[in-house]
Image (cartoon, rainbow, N blue to C red; front, top):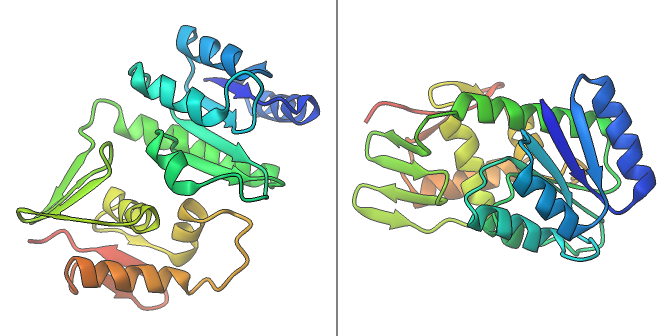
Length: 222
């Protein structure tokens, strides 16, 4: 699989490239937003690792331009830990996931593999998931319950998405934290319970079942 790294910190970019090459990926590296957009548009990549603060074009604009041109390549955004990244803005431009610097290389590899796995599972599949009267469009990031559209925040949608993609399976709290929150999140892990509670209130109480000691399961029956 081919990966593109768009990162202006050359030492970091080289370190990532060496590590990912050792993992068995073919890796290209560029250090400028305009060149990154050109490479991602012209090349056939399975995933793009995209920094936000770039010369030429920032990561938001690169991501938005790729999505506007119809490119569906998974994009993992990288951001410094100084508040520059607005999660809602990143997701609105079409990013699939993000990591905050400094990050663990092990976590980055796990995120890369998860995005590639998700892409493989979703190839040719509809982004619309229907479970009884619940309809979740993961491409448009819209949720409907019956005929009514339900307004969710970016975090609420991301939590629901993790449950929808594995409907009928138990998804652990740690798995939700890993995919929805920054890996460096060191707050109360019970934040997941807060979001699940909010989803139950906005959707339907019995839709998300707690499996004691294991996690949560989206019920698939109407």
